[in-house]
Length: 275
Image (cartoon, rainbow, N blue to C red; front, side, top):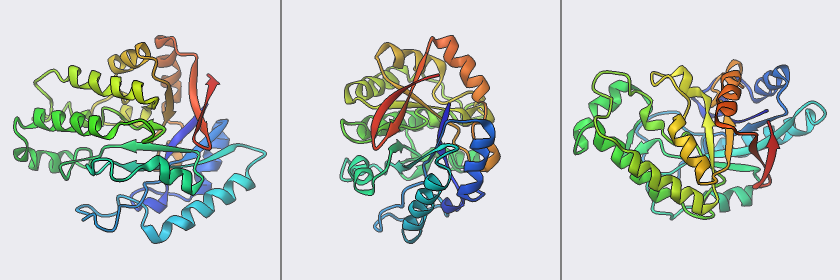
């Protein structure tokens, strides 16, 4: 197995050195670990929340340390270098895959955390405070979230869509559960992903969140498989001890779905990997 979604102290909101994450992956017997540090926001972007991404001045240091670890541990584990790119509603003016190619990365996740400037996954209090900005309240947030994903996904945009239904993170809390069915919009997103040749990440961090399940939900995963979408896996670790979290449950889920292969990435090329 491999873990292609980990964050380190470089992001400002995660803990532990990159080497600690590698050592934890080695301890778990993982075949690969992929660093997916949050790519810096563009200079023109006005940050409303602190420490969400790797500062631009620190990014070369992050890449250099990942490269050092890849060489230092080459006989014990494969270290992949990637990034998580936030889609900021810029209408495709920035292309993560092009930047990943320029930087020599192995993979690039693209994710939506901000919907019309509102963080859907920061705290339930912040989300609830901003509900009045959306027509329909929480259902308006869901609608705008999936429309933003639909706007993001395009051929050649990224290798992988991260935590596809992240918007559900707080859906068990009062006032934050949707009352409408958003499955038709989700299907549109999946169809766009399938036609774009992009993979979908199974993100195991959801099992530790209020939603209590992986991202995305099993129904979404089943539809993704029907459409021939490749799957990959990540823990979204923000501490070394979270590397590979719930991978035992992940294996049960994959068996339940009849999945025998996951997709790993090398120099932005997808490579099937038997589970």
